[in-house]
Structure formats: structure tokens, C-alpha cells
Length: 86
Image 1 (cartoon, rainbow, N blue to C red):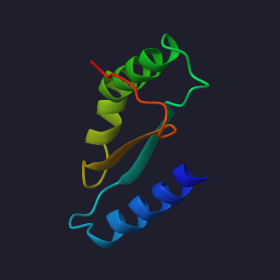
Image 2: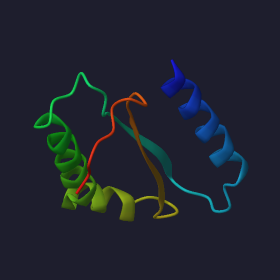
Image 3: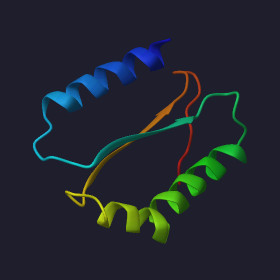
């Protein structure tokens, strides 16, 4: 529940400071809690990295009116579940 509240606060704050028009605001969310094992978390990271660098994704951005997107990555987990992201 705290993760949802934190995400809501973050999104509201980001709307308040939006300075440039964009074609789309995209939020990528990943579960980094204890329910995700040490093999799954890197898989999520690699999947998102591959998606946002894929040529079709880049082409979609360049085809937009503003040719810009706002991208937010949110990862959540419990305070007792620290992760090493090296």
C-alpha cells in the first residue's frame, strides 16, 4: 500500500513540474519485493532496457508530434528487502 501512495505522490509532483510538452507519459513499474527472486529482478531490468532501446520504440518516439516522451521507472519493495543493483 505504501508503494501505491508513493507512486501517486511522485506522479502528482511530476505533473506539477512538467515544463515541456511530450507525446506520451510512460510509467514503467517493477516489483522488487521479496516475492521476486534474484533471477527475476535482473530479468525485469533487462526487459525494460531492451524495450526502451528497441528500434521500433525509438521510431515511435521520433514519429510523434513533439518527438519526446516522459519516462518514469518505479521499483518498489519493502523496507526490509534491500537489493543490490550492481
